[in-house]
Length: 75
Image (cartoon, rainbow, N blue to C red; front, side, top):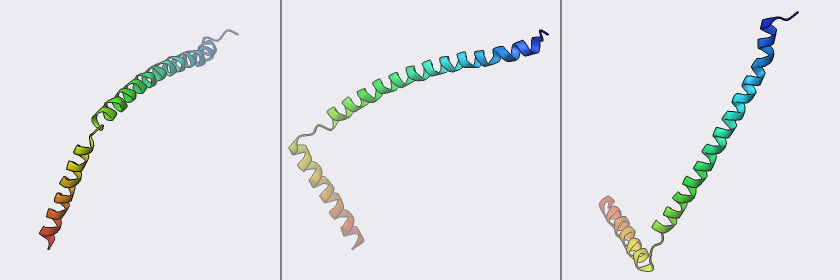
């Protein structure tokens, strides 16, 4: 009663399981790389947004002037 089709059917789930293991390993690798990238992006963002109080006041003045100029046009 050795049916070759039955033997193949029994081995297919093993192949699928082994593919899933590979996919999980690849997924974990991608997640580790993504975590490294996000950490680096966070560091860059922290460094680029570290502005001085003088720069803050300059930006506040810029936005105030921009707002004032936009309201004057609508009058």
